[in-house]
Image 1 (cartoon, rainbow, N blue to C red):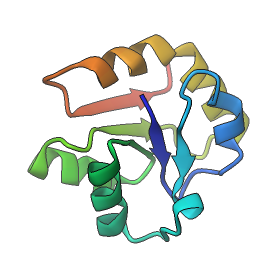
Image 2: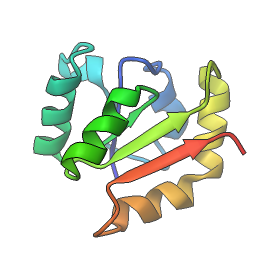
Image 3: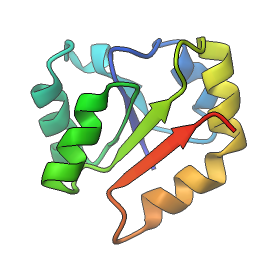
Image 4: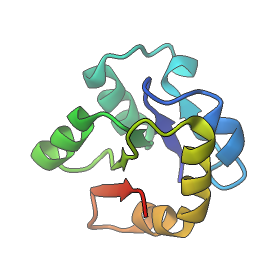
Length: 111
């Protein structure tokens, strides 16, 4: 499973999760800005799962379905280190979501 991190997440996050989610990247690495439509299309065309705190991707997923899949982070103002810890703790859940043929949206909140 490869994640495409939205502009609202730090690019530093990639280094913290690359062992679990190889080939993941940040939108800025691919020349994408904060344009949600461009991010959606890029993720769809390149088989990424969008990882975002942005509710727009939640809405896209509900309205359009997959692909791409969306993992929506409901973590408030948590910093990069806290988000990385959560992703590592819930990696098996994310990987199962990525493998599912029927799921299009995963909501990850604080536990």
